[in-house]
Amino acid sequence: MPAPDFYPDRQNPLFTRLFQSLSYPLAWWKYQMRLRISIEDVAKLKVLRGDRVILMPNHPTFDDPIVLFLLSTRAGELFHFLSAYANFKGLQTKLMQYLGTYSIKRGVGDRTSIAYTLKLLETHARCRLVIFPEGGCSFQNDTVMTFRPGAVQLAMQAMARIIKKTKTVPNFYLLPVSVKYYYTRPMNWAIEQSLIGLETALNITPPDLNFYPRLRGIGEAVSRQFEQEYFGHELEGSLNDRIAQIRAQMLTICEQEIGLEPMPSLPLRERVYRVQAIVEEQENPSPEHRRIYRGTVRLLNFDSLYDGYVAAVPTPERFLDTLTRLEREVFNIDKPKPKGDRFAYVKVGDPINLADYLADYQRDRTATIDHLTATMQGIVQQNVDQISAQLHQSA
Image (spheres, rainbow, N blue to C red):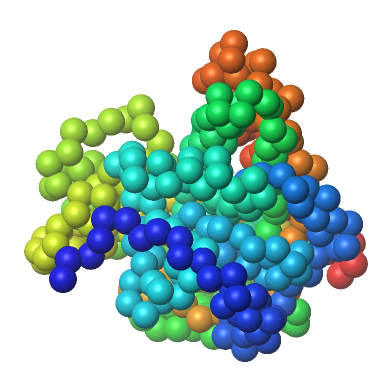
């Protein structure tokens, strides 16, 4: 039986509440993760209990939806989640739906999912909807990627519908949520083991025992492999210049092989999602299509990577962010296991009421959406930085 084009939310409140009651021990057991959030931050969500809220968190790891589910448990609320269509696989599909998750196909303008979102926001006066506006994992614990405007756009469209139907302007909030992971113990052993594994796989002799030169040596080796694969020779220039050239070449080849006209004006992730959407439409993808899809996954793995991320602030978290990416590439692992017990720190920013921006939206929709999107991104990054500063002071 072919897979459906859309997976709706089939949230069962009783089942979700039961799962919430088990969520804290399950998160620690399976994901080695414990939530840390202040009473004041939880209150920012609770005070909006009677109104519609779209939560907009950063997305540094695949575990972030678990963190947001833990937040729903802590707040005593039921959340809905918008998730990439590709995540609905196997046995976890039903579980995701029963817990309030529905799908969206990225890169194709998923009209069914958009219509479903608008109806959900319009008909549920107390809706809490989680949308990750980066559009995918950044794989970086301290860096927030550019927010896509879709979340704000959907919220504004839903509010316009509500106003047309009820003749009143509702309170409708955007809530910035910042997620930052912090290992609970020294991670030198985990870093050492990861370095050794990668050096062995790449046949590298470490230059010395210091972590950073070894990490950079692995990064250079992986870059050279990409260069040989996609250019047939090693590139010149700085590592960041070479990474940029590799990304551009990989994306161009993926588009050409799938028969897509390149659109340089689009962000890289949007172009990648266009390619992935075409492959995902294939009922029985050919080996060639699977190879192309694998290329896009590799590309997204290094989308926000840059030389200097670890050197700027050489924390265990930044080391392991980068090592995890390299393990995903070298060992072809989609989701490496957690490296150790972590605290997931969550900070909730001050909510933004879209009702305050209605006049601006009616005057200039695009400018208002862009402004609100950039504002949300700035708040999330600022609060990630604040969590990092507080952790550094207490260390």
